[in-house]
Length: 259
Picture: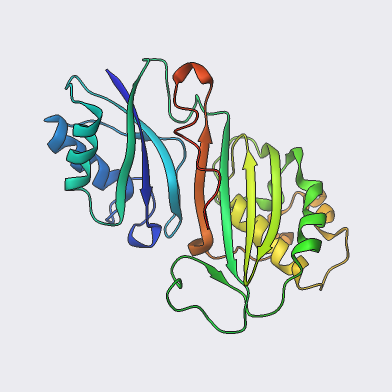
């Protein structure tokens, strides 16, 4: 039987999602917990790999198991064996054709910026800090040229292994709430470091040091070396994944708002 689950985690406690020689990773601790609850080893596949320091409000993954448990039993069992920085928030049985990565048609991220001259203490691991004033209105306006289908070579990491740099952005909103700025972006898929590179460019825009067509110019150049600074990982959150309604997890796989 195939199961889909949603997991939230504090990325500052992990070296990213994917299992590697160094530990801990989210996939590593989740598969370890699953082996104890299901009484067998199982591979967990996520909708996307998050980097070291990147958080998730709702990462979606799937695994196969012959063990039968009630949903509540799965959740309680897994969470009892996970570290405090990770928690399974829901689990559902799904059809065998469901794939956490390939069945998803949209992913959403939020980038959080503390925009004040005093550095944050309580949220130091959970926000990016920028001390100079940022113009959220201009950031939003200049960012709209990125909507639609484009070659995002200027916004991908140099080590990105994706076969194609073409992605489709459905939404890119920048708004302010008090001392915080939120960059909300949804796309069919993302390249390595794409959201953090977009955030880095928009922070430069918010400072007012570039002309109004600078973002468009960067996009057109298709050259990462012209794309500015990559924003820190600690401000980035995977907040939602969308799937076709036939899988019955659409409303469970999306967390539209959080602070």
